[in-house]
Length: 126
Image 1: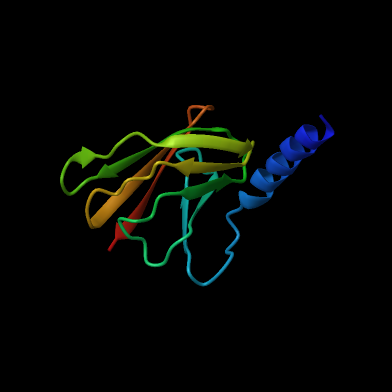
Image 2: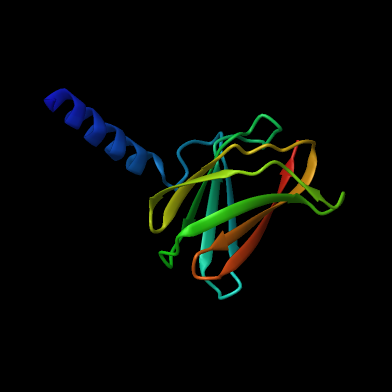
């Protein structure tokens, strides 16, 4: 029983520590933007350059707004991608998985927060 509790605590601590938008290496892409209400948003993608193989992003904001969703949209072609999965780690940091850039080009990462605030940050996928 003690082993199970320690495992759960370790996994929770590891997940919290892993969610950061501070640069971890020179092999990452850091994107910055602002929400419609002026709050800063930082997105860390653990690959540089961003490619179709990029599958996860970290989203941080200074206003402690919970991330409700992230939609991938390709404005040049007028279509999106498959649904993503938001895993909230704290009020100001979330990991987003199931990222699927279907093709190369410019993609918009459309962020929606529970506070009804929104942001769009663009990235070029190679």
